[in-house]
Image 1: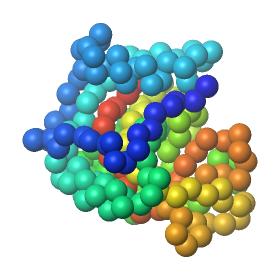
Image 2: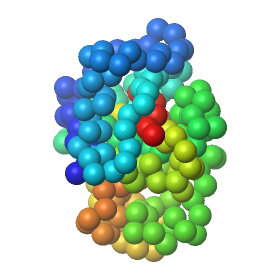
Image 3: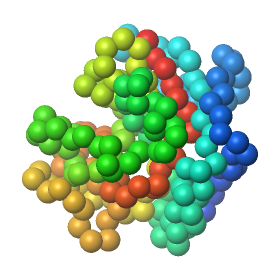
Image 4: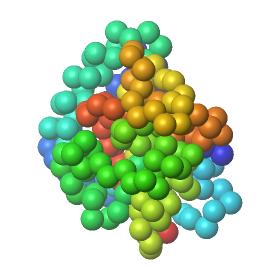
Amino acid sequence: MALESSIAIEYYHLDPPLEEEQTPLPYGSVEYAAVERLLVGSLKGYRLSVKDIVALHNPRTYEKFADNVELYRHKPGAVVMRLLHGTRPDNVNAIFESNLKLSKTNLTDENRNSKWYCGEGFYFTNSAPYACSPRFTGFGEKHLLLFDVLVGSVARLPRGKMYPPEGIDTTQPEDETVESYAKFGEDLFYPTHLIVCN
């Protein structure tokens, strides 16, 4: 079962953060429960559970994302999807400080030859078990970032293609059983929460 959460762009609203902070959420709080609920179905059957959830607030990265939200409001059918990005613990602060950057992406031949590959972009998934893969998160505790991701037009990218066709801003793999997404521009996504699983 996959993470399911998207909202039509015309109904999307995220309060701008006032200051840069990482706020641990108390277990049982409304926000903690809402984020945990997104993952529960996806983690069912796996030996993973949510240990901590931290709300992320960064006015600098939010402002760039908010500018793009306004651009997407003019795209028919645009949505904001809540998707996961698994990473190693030592990458979390850099992503919090400056969001994901093209200069920091490191796709390997193993990535390019996997059924999850859908171009030379930033990768997100609605599958918590896939985001928790040791190839992304290392061994031990799993660090997942929950992103709000702008999605306008989506296409399945045939194997061997590196970039989307003109007019397409989001790709998925050719294999329809795989739920990963690639974005090709910076600041089209914003990390809202860090989720630590063990």
